Length: 172
Length: 172
Length: 172
Image 1 (cartoon, chains in turn cyan, orange, red):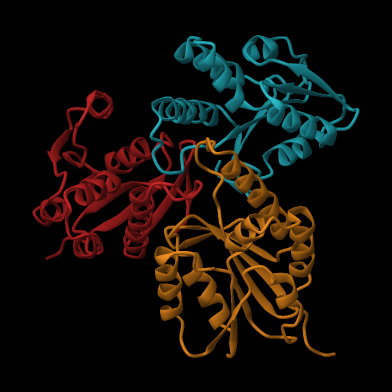
Image 2: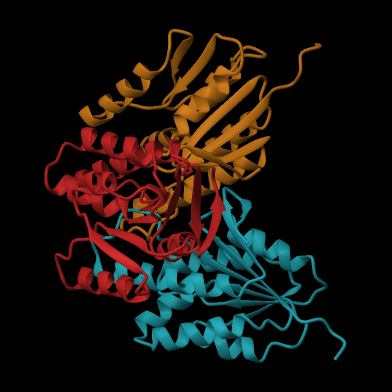
């Protein structure tokens, strides 16, 4: 094939740091249609509102695919060259841990998939490791697993940006 | 008028990251007198100590104005060309939420005021969104509102810096 | 003496942000042997696992010295020109506070020692001040003391990097 290989951009940042908007703008620089892989699961009203808020901001050029757990398999069937946004790794990891999944195996499998993008792929994640050590053991485990996953994804990315108040700081 | 329009610098960072010192140094590069708009309210001894600590560090060239809630109106009457430091947006937002104010309206009004600075203005805020998701619903709401406010302020700023151990990382 | 003076690199970052790996790589760019000054104290199984994990990653070229509290004195006897890694300031500070030590005095003494490195020295610390304000008063004090220490160390460092997903953002 003459098509160029894909690229991976990793957008990391805190709560309401403009990660999704920045990631969407990166994807929208490519010709539509764009695929939005959503990992959120609405367990309660607060979450439903957040999902609705995000969905309302996206235009009709987006096709949304839900992948709360089967993210790697979903990426595996994305067409060659298709712009894909994964929002976000943090909820996927949270779902995986809550479902008592094989965290080490599944995160490695995902990182390997992301390291071989077949189009302009952008993945979003929440940085959660810059506060005080949580008292809750599950929270401590979560931030450790998240940090490990972020390092793996960043290692395979062409570009890594850290969002600060809506502005991207280029880390790679 | 022949005077140049103002500029807005947004200094964002964590606890004890050197935000205030950096912001004060930016203001002190301009001719005195300098106006310090303080948003802190002393509810307890710990807060009183923090306020006293900050006040003690500033020289006599500073004129302090307290604006725990009426920050936008206070900025509206700042003289053309006057160097102004706002320290900090985080306490103002906290005061606004505790006073059950119109958060969406007031933050938009403040962001609009800051986007049209009439002198060298520097505003400080605490980044609070990079830890684990808080269990407390009010804390979750606070960090969401703070993140939204930071994005609005950064969008209207000439310069955005993220403080790391006293060192400014330039985000815009 | 004809020997060149040392240098200090300060590696700051969140949980699992790749701080230790980055710091070890910086040291490994110098000829072995390398000294690893460990400040961790194993109070429980979780901590023992973390220590073992870190130790297992290091090769036989490393000589490990434990200094949970007497870090400054340990640095004072490091040979001229020797590559030294301190991992990490955060646990040292935590040990000092738990031991009810003279925090202001000891942190100043450490910062003065680090500001006059006698070889390629690299120190690691956890940024803990970018989450929501902790409800716990000890946690609030800890993040204040940590922030002050980080500013002092950064002021005396030749280079300061902020780790994001394993990637160093240069702050100084």
